[in-house]
Length: 204
Image (cartoon, rainbow, N blue to C red; front, side, top):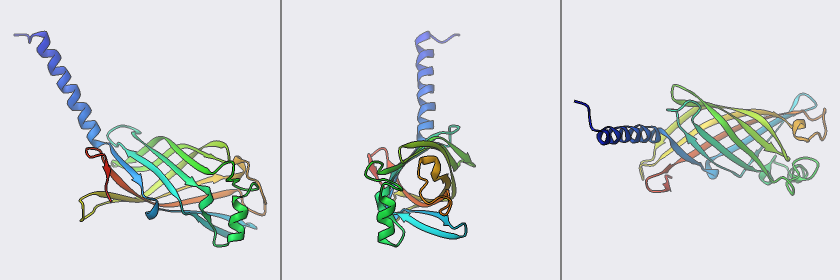
């Protein structure tokens, strides 16, 4: 005997809600922990000498949704005034108008367009990076993702290594080229804290 229309509609609505809730349950939101994140960079001088440095202030959010193809997003901001190469005079020069020009362009911003997963773990992020007022495509590779449950509050934190490569001349930063190399290698050790959606708070 056919079900009454209102029963069929109610069944369909319940099924749709359950499917949506199952997908939403797979999505996981995280906040990057600046105090537990290292953002390093490297370039070459005279073709052989390596110059390394780091940024001390990194922030952002990560949404992982392996149940959906390319699901989730990454949004990261780096405060360029926090650059540190171990020499104050050089750091001040890098902040100046010949390089980063932090007075006009204080932040490097990366926003993903889609994520890549392998075995339900994030493996890479394709997106756009904005630096020095210019936006270009950038791929970031993700390695060694590990998540742990904190014994104190039962919250979750995840750590991973993220790496990428950009060409500074594409962003209008050509000071010292070719004596100072074009390629900047990025290598970030990121720790992120899972956001408890049901409580609206973060784990620690």
